[in-house]
Image 1 (cartoon, helix red, strand yellow):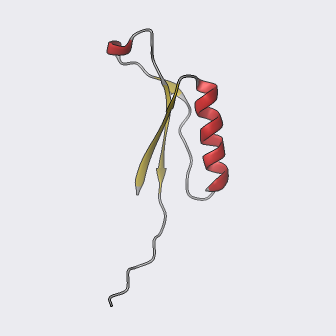
Image 2 (cartoon, rainbow, N blue to C red):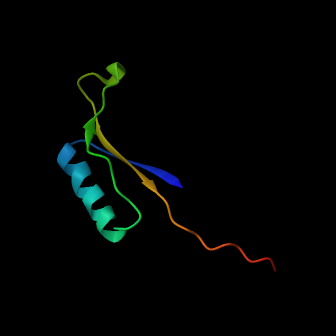
Image 3 (cartoon, rainbow, N blue to C red):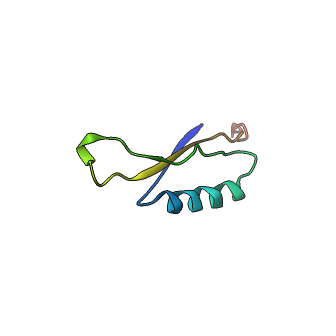
Length: 64
């Protein structure tokens, strides 16, 4: 399992990228709704982000 975070300067930018990625992996990945950051340290310059969990069943390694 791999956790992904897509981050950008606008909600539209993040949504466009997450939609594109989902179209390539429709059965393996779904991103959360886009949210605006809330860290007070970055007040006035928050980024937008979306998370997803990618779960692929990788083949079992063969012993040589």
